[in-house]
Length: 197
Image 1: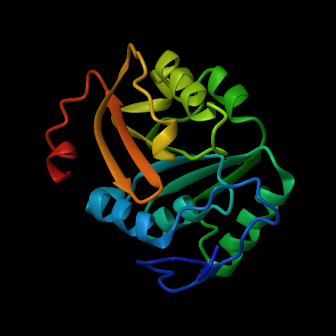
Image 2: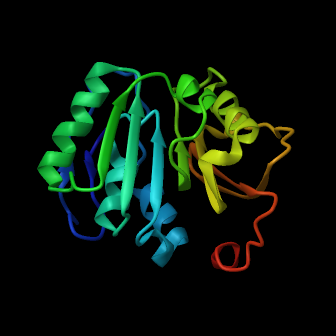
């Protein structure tokens, strides 16, 4: 992508990130990432993240740069996992990071071994993978703390309403060819976080 990826704020602000070779990933643009972290604000501090289909690791590393306590990066592809490792080393943000090479759907189908404040879903486009991951989180909500957010990054043409039992959509933000869709648990009161949107 033109201009490259960089960390936009926090401890590693301005640090450029490496791309995953090939076209198997969908990097988030700096503009969209900046908008996302403006929305999240101070809630990122001390939070726990699950960065699914992590690619370059840009979102999870941005979270660490902004004070997140823990980020688990998951990607099926070895090149992506190696890119995340290099980017964590380059930004000096390895503390609090865990990298897993594996299938995101298999992970979500297992009993939760950790609870997350944020789950970020940004799979390759036009394959319906975002919906499958969302439905798995809906079926296994123990991965999520009570007031967790699930954030989906897709092309606007991919969007459809999804029938969910334990999650509910509460916002959508469009930035050019990127759509961010926000979900929360049905039992969340939403007073603190949704008020910031």
